[in-house]
Length: 213
Image (cartoon, helix red, strand yellow):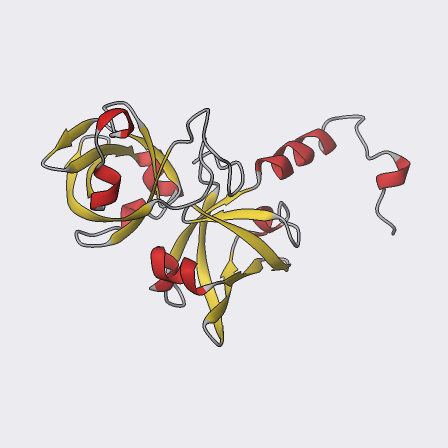
């Protein structure tokens, strides 16, 4: 489980082809290397651009991960090249503070940057997504874009917008995104469960929650 609060920007140090996917070698920023009990260990879970992967090797201040064909087909990790920056977040400890929202690290699909409107130092950024993902979003609800916990501003049939503050733009990959760039999307888990329940045979909203026709 993650929070969507990015700990730092890492850099792709190497990409090695394997039989059923790739080995991804990431150089994390110095503050994330740490020491003592907080230091990253083999088997730890790390979200890379919002995709949860397992640390399989730690060497020369780099973390190695394996990404299979399913992961590469459902995320933007397969489009990475050496030198690219990536958003990093380690899993939430039991005693940790939840500052964003519950993020599983299970990417639902890939969207793309559709439009960017600069408003002073802020940017209103629109993302185009499959209609099935947009249906799980609500205005003022939560969404994870490349692992970043964000608040939805507007939702349309196949796109949504967020308002990005200068801090988010400076410490995450959204600060360098351009129109057309692919981004990983994870919708709020609460929306998925509600949709599942409403699709069960014989299940419907109570009258007080029924939407007007």
